[in-house]
Amino acid sequence: MFFCKDCDGYRVRGKRVAICGANNDAVEYALGMLHYSPCVVIATNAEKPSWSRKHAALLKEYEIPVEPDKITGVIHDGCQVQALRFKGALEVKTDYIFTTRGDIFHTKLAKSLGARIDRDGQIEVDHCMRTSVPRLYAAGCVTPANCQMIIAAGQGAAAAQAINRDLFEESIANHSLRRFREVQLEEEKTVPEIKSAKA
Ligand SMILES: Cc1cc2nc3c(=O)[nH]c(=O)nc-3n(C[C@H](O)[C@H](O)[C@H](O)COP(=O)(O)OP(=O)(O)OC[C@H]3O[C@@H](n4cnc5c(N)ncnc54)[C@H](O)[C@@H]3O)c2cc1C
Image 1 (cartoon, rainbow, N blue to C red):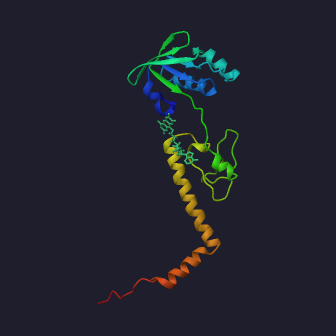
Image 2: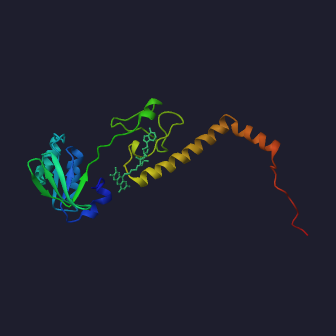
Image 3: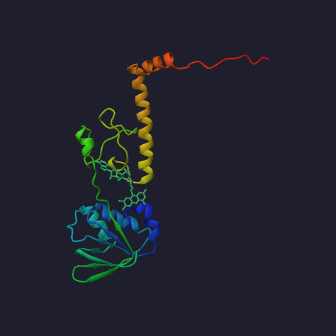
């Protein structure tokens, strides 16, 4: 089962693909998948479709079948999916399954610290991953970024750099670097040895 059509769509070229979901995302996954395969079906797993009228019209226009019944089983040979079984014993031959995003954002800690959360439940951040709370940073899938590993890692790096920069500026503003320097000046060698290069 796949999760990301951008990451794995190319793997299912020419195969029978089932998209599990009942929202606009599911419709867009199915439409996007047409670039890879002509044989795409949506399986709502008996969930009431919440897709918009526009999306319903697109499904009709592009003639994408929808299986509205509960999925009762997956027929497979080892790791290879062969079919989805639906309530009433209907079986739909399927080579690959994609599930659409139904993200749950674990933002309890950020919320408890007062961070602003957007309408989708994600933590608002600036381009340096700073939240609305000073000294609180967020990176990865809890932010509005696309949910991919390389993006989460990149955001983590951006956050780390911002943390260093912010701590540095704070240490100048509140003179803590100066106090640190005073200890160095008192306890450590702070000037390199100098000698003449002439023989
Ligand atoms: C099925 C699936 C397939 C995917 N395939 C791909 C793919 O092919 N390529 C790709 O780039 N991305 C893929 N992704 C997305 C990728 O996994 C995420 O983008 C990435 O893991 C995000 O990293 P993250 O650090 O934001 O979150 P996570 O990796 O989810 O890490 C968050 C961590 O925080 C921990 N945690 C949560 N709450 C607390 C708490 N209160 N206290 C302590 N720890 C806590 C969690 O247990 C977890 O370990 C896939 C995701 C799924 C679900």
